Image 1 (cartoon, rainbow, N blue to C red):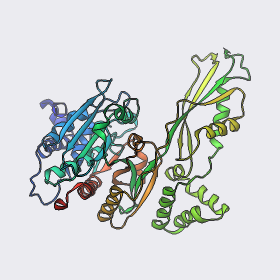
Image 2 (image 1 turned 90 degrees about the vertical axis):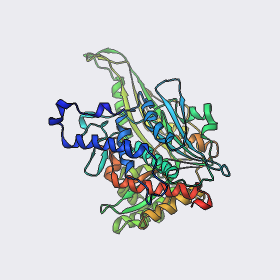
Image 3 (image 1 turned 135 degrees about the vertical axis):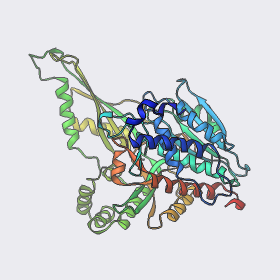
Image 4 (image 1 turned 180 degrees about the vertical axis):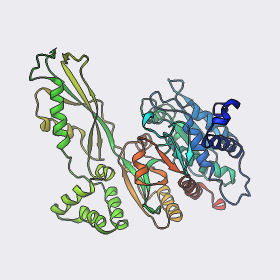
Length: 486
């Protein structure tokens, strides 16, 4: 399993210390994680979370193609060694699998499920300072694609669940750990899984990716946001038709010029502000935890005059995360058109990625775009049927309250708030069946680290992983442990 990371005898003299250190850490990972920790241990062995994450990163599950069998191969022995029931669900793509591990409780209460997607997005290798699939640990952080999104979550959720078994915590509920396929793509995601194998993933409530634990510049945690709902994803296609002809004789109906005009208008357009009840709570928390001018702007955003709200919006929207939480967002992501340098193409297309706040009308936004472009040479249409909106998960739930309480225990200085997740997740597979799902990236990160997600040199600190594992272990124990085991 680890043969590929071992240096050959001839290469040892030229091998950097960091690589040798990684090899040693890999062997430690094997020795420490393969055997359960004795029940008498006084503290959870949470440093192993970083070693597990490094190993998961080395299993390249970029989507496409999104092959996750290697992730199951890593996790299976670790869970089986601790008495979990392991079940690997194949999909029509033989290399894409869903991994289940269930720790049995006494069955007096319905299960708690931990969902974490095993696939990751691709990389621009030339823009990384390290190999994005080497699982490098340096300067106190684990580097690699998926470190934050969401192999770090796999590692924290898995280690927290394993600790319940290691410490022999009596359970009223089964704990179900699920490493999913195809979250970053489709079609064999949790929606597919729910249609085929709902009995394996049925639970009283679930944890997934979502909210953030955000650090200040001094390293202290500012706030913990727990997502209770997600934006919906809508794909929109702009199609321009024109005359295909020789490039030496351009015509006014050039399809590329048409889409260019549309993009220029889109770049100047801003959708109106929209707030859900949970996003209002989130911004109120930011007003409370910020200082000076920033605190004033958040207060005015929520309670100011129209002029103050507009000014606060303009200032705060410089932060792309804040901007995305206040409105529907529209991002051009793919432009297609042309095939030869001396031919004007007869058509061109632009794909728009739209993220809708719950309650927004997708058809109404399409109509708004048609009026904005106002171009008879351009058509605007939804690329696929919009998935139904999922109900928000209540912050009165036992799982939410436990997660909030243990977050305050771990980071007493932090405020905890519900949150509208600015992106999409696969939580709809449960929420659409009435099962609450709460989202969190379970490790403190800075705004700089947040921007690296889906970007370059993605990383998460070893200390953040340790803290997140401790917090999550206590959360699981509080929600699933029997009275005698709490």
